Amino acid sequence: MAAPMSWRRLVHSVYSPAIAGVFTRISDRLFRARERTGGSSVLLLAPLLAETDPAPRRVSRPTGSAGAQGTDSLCANFRWMGDHVPAFRVPGTHVHILTSPDQFYQTMKARIKTAQRRVVMASLYLGTGQLEQELVDCMEEALQRSQESSRSPDLKVSVLLDYTRGSRGQVNSRTMLLPLLQRYTSQMRVSLYHTPDLRGLLRLLVPQRFNETIGVQHIKVYLFDDSIIISGANLSDSYFTNRQDRYVLLENCSEVADFFSDLVEAVGDVSLQLQPDDSVSMLEGMVHPYKGNRQDFSAAARERIMEVVSTAQARQRVLNRMEDSEDEGMSDGEEDTWVFPLVQMKPLGIRVDEQVTQRLLTDAGPDSTVFLTSGYFNLTRAYMGLVLGAGASYRILTASPEVNGFFGAKGVAGAIPAAYIHIAQQFYSQVCRLGQQERVHLHEYHRPQWTFHAKGLWYYLRGQDRPCLTLIGSPNFGYRSVHRDLEAQIAIVTENEDLQSQLQEEQEMLYRRSTEVSGSTFERPDRHVKLWVKLVTPLIKNFF
Image (cartoon, rainbow, N blue to C red; front, side, top):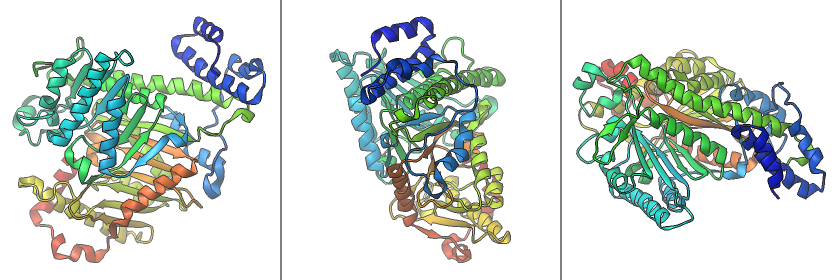
């Protein structure tokens, strides 16, 4: 039973729409609780009518299992994240770990076809093959249905891509989407983010194949009504078939979906808008990314994007305080998982993900274990210093040369796998020099005919046999992710045993296909790195 309309009208007449929405959600929950317990609705609503306590909120209720350390320790370890970003409380049963490219692809197709209100897709680029065309066809099917059906006449489709990568070649992401934009102009939006760092003479001189090295839109978010997939995978055929990545589906998590929809819209607002004639233009009043003043663009973009983060953070603080003030006897034990969105956009002056990741690695204690993975292992100096200097045990998984995405590429790009061999060897040598071999282990992923693109980490607290936290999204923990690109990931902190088991199975599935690196690994003939590659490795570390 939801709250009666009389109560809803009263709330909306007294408070602003944002606060009224929070009150309405909580009151709906309270009235449903009254149905279960037979208690008084007046008493249940009393905490909502009282002045909120400004004291720090309790981050999580004591439900589920947090391993040997217990729930209180789990809360104490991660409650600080809510000081940096919005904290969304969701049921762990609504979070599903996807494990394969095909599962990722089929889930997206099915969700697009059944979307009623919105489809939001943010990626580096959209490929041009048959599988990508089928994805576009699903969007067209949904848009056509919305025009013919009274149930979903307002379906909107918004696509955010990188300008440089999405415009490469005669057939590209733009040409894939133009027919939809031309046919469904009022329902379709295509935004192309252009880094402010690629401008002037640099923009004229850097070849099209390499202009994306200066900085790109790298966020990977796929949203369908109130469900969302956070991933590191792009919208391209290899990511649907034989390129291993990570993917998490948050089902019917409206507040998380709203946040990422607003975030993509904000980045879209400061991006070039694709027009039906294949031209691009900025929204009226917005500074141009490479023709306008660099500082003015970054300041305007930062203000627009951080407005989304700050508004959501304030709203969630109010909502979480209200939920924490409920009678403990009412708790249904469902919302046992927290989702923290982490955004990194250094060119715009936004460093949230970097700050949270550094704090997480700093706090990793001697009895904790961190499994960290990156398709392109190139830790920043700060991250590397924390890994080598902290007390936690680390198991780091990276791509073997054969599953590196650049393996077999022509020209300079073909040397990238060898450069990553050199980076891994330098890191391993430093581990040995510091006597950290028992604490820090390096693994290489192997899989014939596949490539490896997974990134993120799994965090095991002392005494736990399952991870209670994961980071999943687009960042690679490298220089580009921190300094050049637009990135987003989520930290999931959970007490839900089934979700913890899903995360454990995902981690074990990836590491099962790996071998541990030793000194002899780099003595093999196929690991020989030419001198010129060693000399250009610092350049590759900063741009690839």
